[in-house]
Length: 333
Image 1: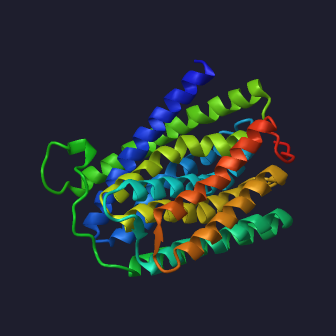
Image 2: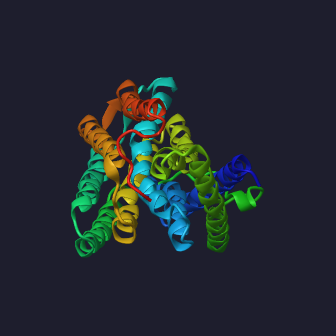
Image 3: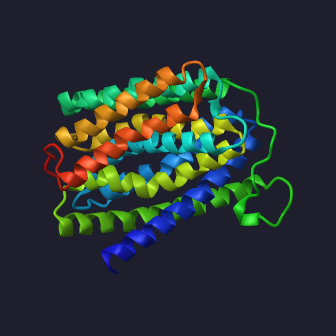
């Protein structure tokens, strides 16, 4: 199978699996009587982040040739894309909906999601300077931070009242699906994600070799586009249905999951030599997160200001195109 066909097949599988997973976790959140913000920041966020989580795990477990670069690219590229392009698309959806041109959510949710990320991501970056034993300690602390974040999120808000769209496996049946059916759909989604991720890793390796572009560069830009951007469309749909808390939680909660859990994988199981190319993208990500923290500190922001968050990612991609994918000095893989 050609590299292009591998990419297409892997993206189709990953997007389909993400849709199944997100739909199932929405129902799980409803059945568990979670608040809308908690469902977005935790369950839907994990659904969004799962493809990006599975890709490096599969690459590392399978000892793929560029597994190190794929894993590091996932840690750096996923939050980079979500907090820039993901937020920009959310802002665009806010601007184009009728009546309300401001994103409105609980201030506590915005501070919690972006605050946790703004602690975890700098810790991940500082691991570049640390030896392996110290990085393991930081990785464990990152998991502890995420558990604290989960506990704080579950304590906030009141349960959602509106039922999600029907469970995809039994769309023709009215009412609430059985928990067993929700579990089955989750299992199918995970299986499809593993297969799709393996195909994607293979296609990425082939493309990196053929184009002679550093694998880390492709992993920072291409992997998140395939695994994260399609899923951010859920945030657009939630904005259109005026569930701003669920929409924002899907983006910011995913970034927090990736900084903590994916960050743990990156600093513990890779060489974590991200080079100046990775460092540039990481610093842009952190700057964007701080901008959003200040913007949403009171829980609302105009869509046009959210739209501006996409400019740093666009500038980074243009610079990579101009330099042939060699912005900065990519580390060896």
